[in-house]
Length: 227
Image (cartoon, rainbow, N blue to C red):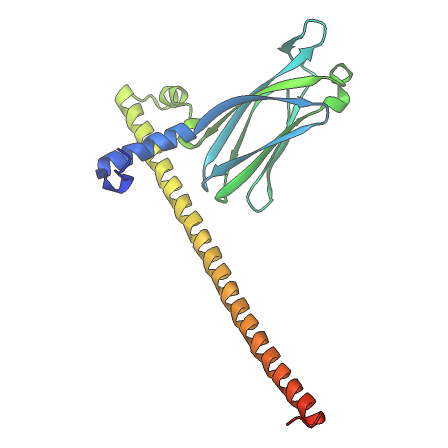
């Protein structure tokens, strides 16, 4: 019902909703088109100490067949990642299909940019490229079948490992939300303080202006011998 708030739900239900939210936000796939020398950037909110894996593949537009075909091996993609402070976390040239990995050390918005090396590809000049991108964040970036084979885990042990990773990711998300709330609170307090001082300054200016006008009028009336 519309009148029931989340705060009234049982603790277990709230925890389940949080798990579902983290799972839904941890992975997403998309594709986009870019032209020659064009750069496309994405903003991803990532908690600190979180691993991110991006998988991509490119398709080149064939003008004769009017379809997207697999790109030639010579066509590559340059991936650049910057943290919220503008520091470059990753900057590397990859092939037409590849995978990039980085770990965040600062919570906040990370900028992920991709562009092709089209300036070295005469076949791509004036054309367009379709890039399929899949970004995995946190425990979604783990390859659990590979982990199970490497550590020789049973199905129950693997499931427990997944749950522990999910709980750890939820903890990181909660820490990040607290970090955002703290920053918002500090910004609000700073803004309120500036507004207060500006109001005080305006009041002082009005009072000083009124006093000056009164003294000026008094001097004028005395000079005209009206008082």
